[in-house]
Image 1 (spheres, rainbow, N blue to C red):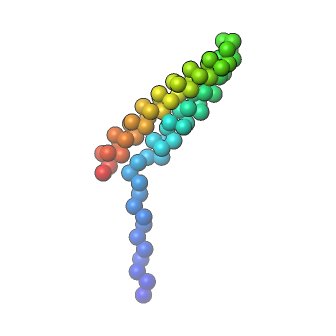
Image 2: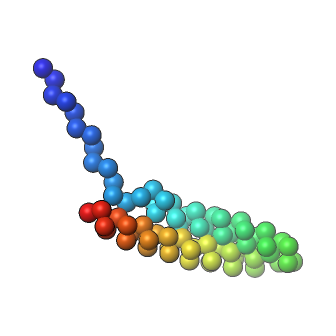
Image 3: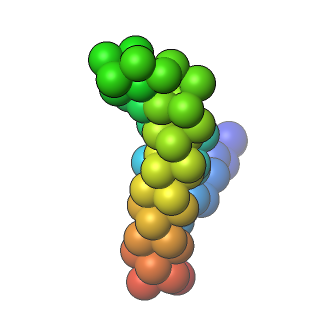
Length: 72
């Protein structure tokens, strides 16, 4: 007789924490480029937006670490 298979253990780290930094970089660059285009300098806007996006991504990533540590 076959034994029932066990499910693989679910990761405690949330998916939104995994994609926070690259997502912040991409969205920050896009929104910053849009603002830069609106205000006259596309490159400066994209660079500032990328910096802000990475900063927000690190903040969300840190929140994911805190939540994952509570599930252990």
